[in-house]
Structures are given as C-alpha cells and as structure tokens.
Length: 330
Image (cartoon, rainbow, N blue to C red; front, side, top):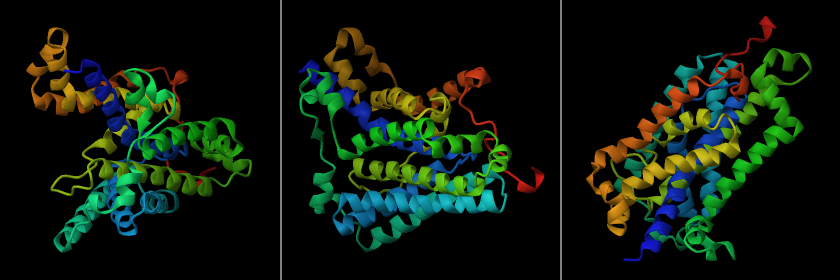
C-alpha cells in the first residue's frame, strides 16, 4: 500500500470538505458585520445549490452555474433584508424561516425536475471539465503536501480568494470600515451620513450570494446526484458556529474550516489511514461510523461553549448584532 498516497489523499479530502464551509462562513461574516444575524445559511446554500446546478448544466457552463447560485442566494438575502431591515421583523425567526423555506424550495424543484429527467453532471462536459483539479505549477509537485493542498478545482481557489478579499475589504477599504461602523453602532454611523439601510441591504445580499456559491460547490462535489437528503446536510449550521470560532475574521475562517474538514474527512478516510498505518492508527477502525458522522456537530457544540467565555475585548463580535435599528429612536 502506498502510505504517502493515503496521506496525500487524506489532506486533499480535508480541503474538499472544508471549502463549502468556507463559503458559508465568509458569507455569514459579511452579513453579521452589518449587524444582522442570519440563521438561514442552510436554506440559502440549498437554494443556491439547486438553481446553480440546474442552470449550470442546462447552459453547460460552470461560470453560469456560479453566477446563478450567487444571484438566487442574493435574492434570498434581499428577502431577509426586506423583512428585518425595512419591516423590522425578528432576525432569529426570519432566519429560521428562511432555512425552512430554502430547504422546501430545494426539494420542491429537485423532486419536480427529477420526475421529468434530472440533468446528470457527466452529460455536460464543460461542467465536468470545469470542476476538474487544476494543479498549481511548482507547488503541486511538493511531496505529500503538494497534491493535497495545491491541486484542486477552480471553486476551491475561488473560495480562498474570496476569503482574503473580504478580509481586505473589511479592514483596508473605506466602505468596509463604514460597514463595520454600521454593525457596531448604526445610530452613530447614521449621524455621520452613512446610509445604514443601504449598507445592510447591499452586504446582506453579497454575503448570502457567497453562501450560494458554497451550496453549488457541494452539489458539484456530489456529482449532482439528487436523492432524499439535501446536499447541504447541516453545513449551514456549522458555518454559523464557525463564524464565532473564526472570531468574525474571514482569513481565520480558512483555518477554522480546515479543522472541521479534518474531522469530516475521518468519516470517509479513517479506515484507509488505519489500514496504511495499523500500528499507530489502527484504532480508527474501532470507532463507530455514527460517531464520525456526529463529530463535526459535537465539535461545533464544543466550539460554541469555548468561545462563549472569550473576552469581549478580544472578540470581533459586532456590538449591534441581531438588534434591529429604529432610526426614530436615534
């Protein structure tokens, strides 16, 4: 058995499993930096996944799929913003409702189309080839780590770029600093001429659009195989927790999602590691599959408990997160 190949495959799969979480986490960070708490990540990713996949296949274009996934998810963000920013609805309830709505749309559209003829990813060469791995010259030749970290599909690289760009936008640009001001103290931002509602609407839509791309990635990663379970499979909820784990920092979310990707990969590759290294990792075969499936959610709970005691002084938590802004009360 090629032991180095098993390790390389394990590292490669960690990245594969962490990228959709990265999209969801970075998108939610942008939303929360505006002062809005959106618990509808699961549903928004599901809507982006189903429409992005269907439209991408029919157009036989990965780019069209990415664009549609972003736009449809952004429309869900616009709905969330209309209800919570304009109509002052409760953000927690609205987000939970959006999750139920998004999952309902996912199964309604998917089951309806499946009855007439589901688009099979293998039948669309531009989608299949566009989602193929693209090795980075030089870096991908590094032993063990090269192929695992630097030979992935376009959406993996796009996710990393988006995380870095969002960090730069939030910390190094004037609109980003204004957005953070809106999230910290909307009344103060309003008093200096910042259009609070516009900033909230715009960044909620962009953040939700990023989540939608993550959903589309998950659909492609499962080869577009539609069945009784949703492609997102709880990743949206984990992404909400990862926002706290990453301390509302898009760059740190890369590390945070990598950690969660590691535990998720154990579910798939644990037996391979045990067979390749029976002396050191043979015990992995004795762990029940159900525990592997529960690990990401157990770790999520631990993260929430651990981060809840973190000092507010060192936290990136926006001060007005989850609080509706009434301009008349200023």
